[in-house]
Length: 280
Image 1 (cartoon, rainbow, N blue to C red):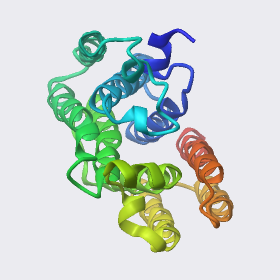
Image 2 (tube, helix red, strand yellow):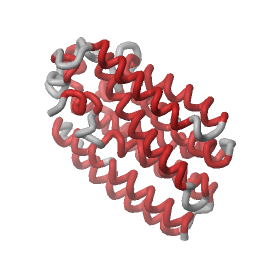
Image 3 (cartoon, one colour):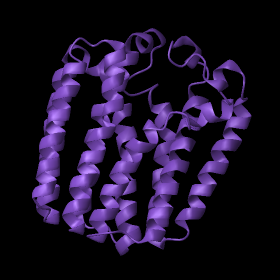
Image 4 (tube, rainbow, N blue to C red):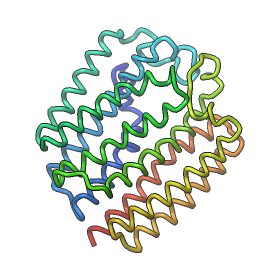
């Protein structure tokens, strides 16, 4: 494996998918139909660039601790295949490239992009001082929502913030599942997470958050006047969430990680519900 591909996780696109779906939700809702092609290109490309940049800065921040975690001990910075200084150069190039794309939108979107970049850069370091880094990650991922509305309509309506909230909640759900897979290693090296914070109540809290996500999306449906197809997508999403609860029931590492990966399908289903509702 090319170490640079590994560093940017191009070989593991799940992070791109999980960032892409809320972006697509927002673009289709903001346009009330098919988004403009140039915006689709800007945001899809931006998602790829920002997600790869996020992976680079994450590995830079974790370069001294990754070697102590079974799943991350072979990452290229911690093994020395790529130097820390080279990683920072790659991060800078990716961030600047993403910013160049934003310059083709409008001033409001540009201003929001500075906030998004700052939060994305801060996130990897929050695992050292707060038990809620998943919320920070959720906000970083959710910033694509107001940016999509700003780029489409040059404003961010009140209704968009409900979609923002849904993205934050969903991110906390799946990233807590991810953290459950790493909990034992994280406890040894004093890395904080919601999985550690929730402890034996992790499944219960995830259940509450999953219900909250569905309720917020129902509110989104009301505010954007979505149709039956969207409600059908919510029902299907609820069944997927039940499957995730089954996977994490015994808190086995492999199954917790599988549940994390499988959240991709919730994003797909909700996108299908939104796009069919606004296009037809």
